[in-house]
Length: 261
Image 1 (cartoon, rainbow, N blue to C red):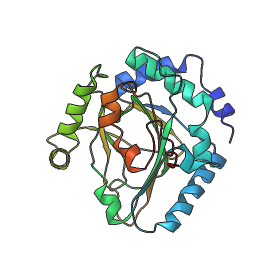
Image 2 (tube, one colour):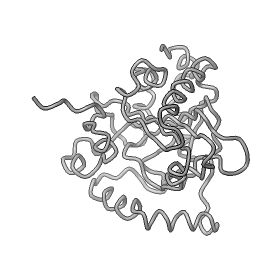
Image 3 (cartoon, rainbow, N blue to C red):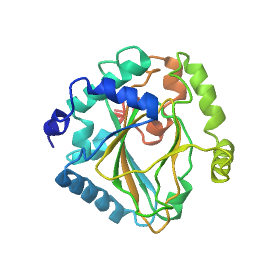
Image 4 (cartoon, rainbow, N blue to C red):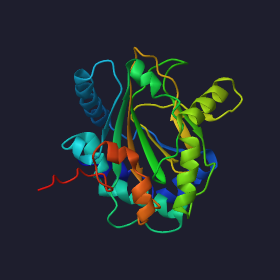
């Protein structure tokens, strides 16, 4: 799938404008980024996966799990990588590693297992996150919109500081307390209402975020594209971070591990 025309619509220096919006508002939007045909193909891909996993949460990790699909094509797009790399430079103050790839993830919430994945507050491991909604339930509640405490920390120079912050905030007790405080309006994050086909950009590393509840009988599906690991060159970072990739049996670059000979 060729995305040249999608990115051709962006104005020159788009990354500068988008980065400023992300700083100021907590996110930026590329409205109607996917064409109707591209969105339909992406939705069909997700529905094919849903048919194999009825009524349960699932996630697909890595570009190789999306070979030959529109979502995989976006993750492999050089123009998309350039945009995310330009955004990373503005936030981290340094260029991205030439070898770093976009790490895509498809998340589908449905059933009771999907509900348990909601209000799971976390910082991303990569600086830039692009979120592409595919299926978002309609209505005023239980729609799985994005919840964010936007830009509450900088990009850490120290990998140890990042590890400590994640240890404090990513455990189940902290997440339950945060969810309780949000539900009682003791904490008031921003809610970003998602529209399928748009692309939402935010500083995932700097923003504590989660999805809102999604009713068990409804489907919420998104594609996430992560880029810009500021601790990529740290041996400690490789050892302690990247748990999602390890659980998916992927290497640090998000690729399938070679089978031992």
